[in-house]
Image 1 (tube, rainbow, N blue to C red):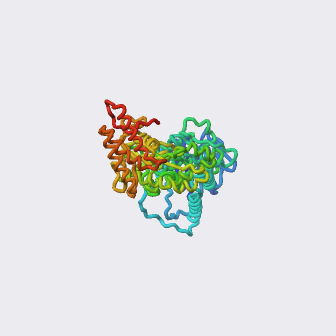
Image 2 (image 1 turned 135 degrees about the horizontal axis):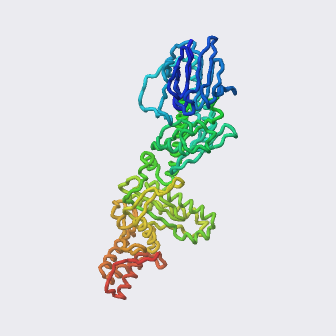
Length: 607
């Protein structure tokens, strides 16, 4: 009957059947005796000789002058010594474990991929010296797999272990996403199933590593890791298992960690966002051995479960963030194509809104009621923006900044913004009715300004706070248009660039050119209502625009003449149409001063 000899270390995992005669082990070349080559720098060139005796026992001779042979159970064989051993025999030397058992039968096991070699052959390393790599499996490739005999005891034990692993992974995948408890459970699972001494989950942000989950076998184990090894795994995007002191040149702080496995955790776009890190300490290597290829593959499976959980957590957080600012339709589009949030120049329509008289209202209501009122108002106004496809960029106290045509394209973005603005104004009666007892009759009123033009749009926030929005002159001008609603006494004003994109669902009144603070050139402004405007407003528009035409051609007397009936038709106590009063005042001033250089500007405002 032959002996079965198995050699396991970080570089090789091989099995051979030896029929008889002496057999030597070591790093050096074969000499006068058949040799098993061991790819382990911690093994002597001539390490030990093994020979089966007639009574079935083994004679073991340590050929090394410096390395003892550890035999388990506290036994060892010092350099230069020899002794008789019984089967089965376990030998540990350097970073290698050798097991010697007797072969009762050589019946092949279906599906067995173990390397079997003649005694005269050299046990070659499975991979080149250095780091050991596990390639990720190919996808979408169907292979013919061997059928397992479930009644075979060897296979039954393997299936029991595999089932235990799969159950652990499934249970882990069902854990709450992204919690610290999940990461700790992942490391505990790794320790329980692989008998490791240290388990870590680390996340990678901006090239740095942060521990988010850790488990140690006992209080003697310190929480530490090799940054060099983690960076190498991230750059290669592959699972590695090896001895840290072979890999890193600075191992003083890692002296008690001897064998480690690191598997990358991948993000949604195939980038390494973290790692699963396990280690077995030096004092446990003799009984448990180093990290084997199978163990490394199981850690890789566990890392995939961690990656899936982190991706699920990120997707949930992203959806919650998006739904605060975007419509559900836009959220689905962003989930399909996150690159829509990347910076670019786009024509957009910008809306600014502001609550009139906020300072006085807040003094009347006090802090608690003011917060409740603003929250109530913002909730209603935000719903109107989102239901018309707008993106809520920001809240500033009692104001809102919203945008259309980014990140997703909207051909009717100007019309959507105007419809949203009119819907926001339509919320005021209900808000006033709700808050009238608290505001002592002071009405809630809005000023809304809208402008269309090119802006730089993109996500300028951080991983902690999402901040998607526009930048540039178009945004500043929209803010100034909103300021002009105060001076012109109107709730909604739009720039000429916005008005040019409106269809037949609206009616507009051209108010004239207005010089706005911080804007070099005068801006043509328009009042906008929906198409259901009453006949009184339509008559006002006709008279006002005729008077504006007189004013722009320096016919100031005719301007006043055209406007006088509008003022006379107003109730004695008002309200008066503020643009009419301002245009009349400006025409009257020109009649008095007779300016040599006339600029047909309706109003010069100060912020």
